[in-house]
Length: 582
Image (tube, rainbow, N blue to C red):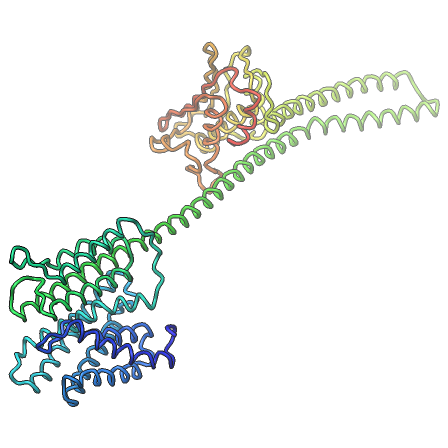
């Protein structure tokens, strides 16, 4: 029935509207025929806001008729029609003004509540007070116009302010469930008991000592903070009607004063009371909603960051693997190119030797064999076998060097090895792949220095540092014409080894030195540099060797990388750690 206008609502609305008129007269009508709170306009405004103006003409017509009927006992027909017209203008103007300022009908945010208060109770109720005062003054010339106008303004404004949020929240629902506590029950009992004492209007020692309704503000604020807008609005409405009833039956809760002063104080109290409590409830609900929204945004953002981190790690792993495969592929290509010469020489020699053997068979078959021919054959065969042996030995040497380096890079197996041989093999393969280099590698390592660990991990650092020199230190001829040299030195200090890579290249700035080990940092982005090589070297040096890798550099002078580690730096389980780090 509350989703859209229908015939049951058309029958129910006039009944509720007439009932609201009777409640207003019962709770707030004084002996002087003045009303403290006028409720019916809030009912019509709720219907217009809830259904967004649908069937507005029908709602207006139904409530107009019941408004006229409700005023007939205290006013002539013509005055009842005029008064009902003023009420209809008040509600219609409030609805249009709220739509103009785009105030939400849910009144779920404090901004919407402020817009509603300004549009309805302040502006439109003030205008209807001016018109209503003129109507009453026309029929009762002896009435005080400004007093009537002010009472009209306040009774309509208070009824709209108190009951519109209550009715809207009751129709819309959607408030969170709150668990009741013992403290909540105590607050309710205190509020109820204090209200009963106000109705009793007790006199102590023969003097009137009123219990002012202002005492009800603290407990209602406590309920407003604990519960939602609906319960707060209900409590505000009941207390406001109770205070209005007290004044209407002659109780003076605000102390001894004239009748009109008592009405003014009552309306001012209800205005202050309702705005404070309703504002606190709406603000509390908005903060809760913002908190839930923020939590959901934080969770969503955390999920996004987690997914981005996973993608970044995967990308980094793919890049590292790609770099390892590219390095190994370049190594294979260089070695294959070098093997072409000795193997090609060997194949040529074998072909020549086979041809000479066939020729000797033919001479032998035709009995044309001579001693000189046999001597020539032996001499040539000797020379050919020497060439074949040299070529094969050269191929074997290349294959052995390549085999050891390839195995170290792929298996990550632990073994003892000579540091000089590992560095020499890597430098040798590097020279094969870069014969046109304008710089050279010098190795100054004692042959007795031995290590126990993963030669593949150390080899990767050595290879990356040599490649770093090629890409950055010697990417162009030096400005002073010097020949570029990368010197690799090793110093043995008890159980520690210090391996230095010093180049006399163009060097680096202090800013570049500070960031050189950061992942994906490179000064040659898009020109062959991935920004991962030195980061991987630092990870291996710290995570696998338990050592360190540092750098010092000066522009146009050179750069020195210092790798420190123990002779035996790895156990059998750290091979998997090496796989994870790289």
